[in-house]
Structure formats: structure tokens, C-alpha cells
Amino acid sequence: MSFKTITIIGFGLIGSSLARQFKAKNLCEKIVCADVSQDVCDQVKLLGLADEVYTDLARGCKEADLVVICVPVGAYKAVGQAISSSLKSGAIVTDVGSVKFKAIKDLQPFIPADVSFVPSHPIAGTEKSGPEHGFGHLFEGRWFIVTPIDDGRDALAVKRVCDLWDACGANVEIMTPKHHDKILGITSHLPHLIAFSIVGTATDLEDDIKGEVIKYSAGGFRDFTRIAAGDPTMWRDIFLNNKYAMLEMIQRFNEDLTELQKAIRQEDGDKLYDLFLRTSQIRKGVVQAKQDDVPTKGS
Figure 1 (cartoon, rainbow, N blue to C red):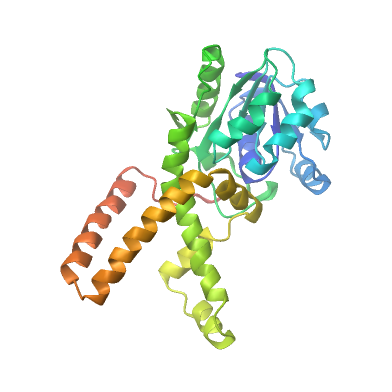
Figure 2 (figure 1 turned 90 degrees about the horizontal axis):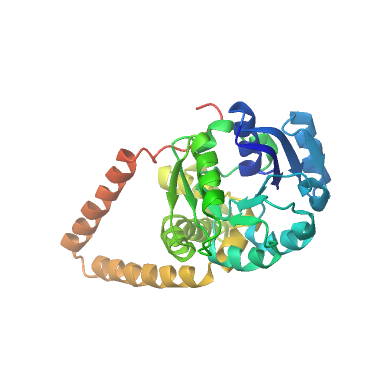
């Protein structure tokens, strides 16, 4: 048993999936749901995902040995303010946010000196949101990145968090917050931004063409629509809170896109072929790393 009481703040896809896994693996004695949405709390009760349910975040954290923050990054400051005085001595706070440097900046000031803060981020998810869409094996075989704050006092807390994610079936990696944000900027955030842009372009077409785009959606566009179906609040916060890494990656992408445009204009088939050959090797690497499938409830 890793922890006696775990409080999960925010019972969306990730939070509810963690709750299911904690129960299935017997990783705590009690799970507490803390979510400001009464509708979400009602759904959590209906699904039986938590032993106690609160819309009052502070009350939900009072007995917690571990608090897992699973809300959009833009809400971290408000969550920190709400729970700061309720965290008990010796507790650990972690999170699942896709941006780490800004998240730490917003949340750390509200973490008491006798509470450990161990930021983390699962590289897992689907385009679905809400407690009804969670499933326990979401993290199995996926990466869970832990980005400790280098203050020299949280080594045991870092180990406990890493052990918990390992017990959930994840592959655990430790890196610095800034490095995390740069890596995720290119592997996750930029692809989502491109998907939002492409699908947005399609929605701006004339009605007759738009209908045909949807009707004849080939694999590429269909995949983009799945990616672009992610939670709008979450992705808005990710882009705004990983601003500098995103701007750097967008600039690099624009430069590469300009080179592709030039190759097409100049009918430089060799350049196009060399690029496509090189990028196909990346796909092979993703498949070999077993990160190519999209997790679903039934898989």
C-alpha cells in the first residue's frame, strides 16, 4: 500500500483513470475526489470512483497523504490558493500537467515548507474528457515524466511518486522542467497546434466544400480531427503556459515548411524524397518503442 489517503483534484480523463488504477492495484486505502464541478462529483459518485467526494477543494485535501492535481494548468494558482492551508505536514503534492516550468512557478509558492512538491506528467491520454471516459490501463507501457524541483530535500518524496507511477504500469523518466517543456513542445504541443489549425482551415471553407471534406475524410485528415478534438480549456492553457518553447517550435516549423514550399515550387523531387525517407524512419522508431497505438477503453 503506497499511501493511506490519495486526493485527486480534477476528475477528468486522467484523474478518473488514476482513481481506477489506484483501486485496481490497491495502491491506497482511500480515494478522495475534489472537483469544483457538482456535475463531475455526481458522476464520480454514480461511477463509484471515490470513497469521498467534495466540491470544496480544501476540505478534500485535509487528510491526504498524496494530492494529485489533474486540472488545466491555467487553474494551478487558484488550486494552490484553495488548498495551501489544508495540506497536512508530510504530505506530497504532485500533478499531471503537460507544462512543467510555468506550473511549478504558479503552484510552488502555495506549497508549505513541510509539504513536498513533486511535479510529473503522464504521456498518455485520448481526445475524450470527463470521468466516464477514464480507464485504468491508460498508463500501462506509457511514459510518466517526473520533474523534481532541485531543492535537495525531496529525494524520498520523488522516489515514492516514481514508485507509484511504476506501480500503475508506466515507464518512469526523470528530467528537468525546462527540458520537459521543450521536448513536449515538439512531440505533443506543436502537433496539436497544427491539427487545430488544419481542422480550423477546413471549417472556414465554403459550406459545399466543407461537407465534402467531412464526407471524404481520408486517414490523414481523420487523424487530425481526432487530435483536434482535445479539451479546449486544457490546450488553451498548455499553449499559453508553454509560450516560449511553443514560439521556438513554431518558428522552426515555419522555416521547414518554407523549405518544403520551395522544393515543390522548384520541382525538387530529390529533396522531397530525402525528407520523406528520413521522416519515415521516425515512424519506425515510434512503432519499435511501442508508442504507436491509441489507447482505448476496450484495448
